[in-house]
Length: 276
Image (cartoon, rainbow, N blue to C red; front, side):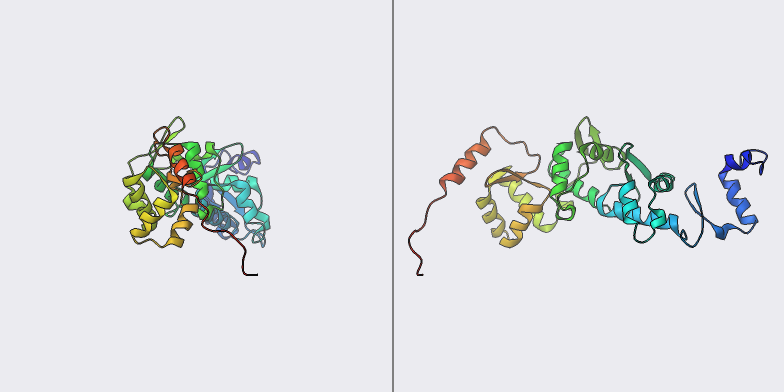
């Protein structure tokens, strides 16, 4: 805007953005403009509160998923503010925010580092509390297991870039570390703590039936055990009937040995005709 005012002859030279805002206020036109970062929008009936809406939707998406794309933010605005469903305007508005971090230029993945709640960071801390360092691809698989994600996780390259810009993580090639280290007792939910405690003591991998009995002995409900077995990001199914902590260092042959025990435990208890 400062350059265009100079080219149009309105100003003798380039006007700095702070000076432009001061001029707008002096002429009493500050109610006609909306400013977010260094982006300015002329208010009208269809664009009132436009930039604020863009920023709110982006922060809501980051709080829920940790990362988002410009296209996703545009799609979320189509019903409430169709005039805002412009990826170029969204990119300019968000990139002017001081906490904006671009993670992948080609596909438009980004994050904001300031939201107080971030589900992606919380889930990463859970995984890294039981396995640090861990390969980024393995970390991504763990992120997709959490029930809130509905099986979705950002691409591996985005996970790596996210860990580079967010505090508490360190990247070494394709390995991700917690820096400083995270204590699993502080970040895991009570149910997950019981499972982790059993696997740290008896694991790193166990037959499902033995893991189940150990957890039930410690006070866990059986139904709850199976819910976490299917959705907890800290757990991995290494083979049919064999589970362990994600990213665990497993001695060679241990999983095969446990699989054989699972097969041997199967037996027919009865056969015959039903009453009808």
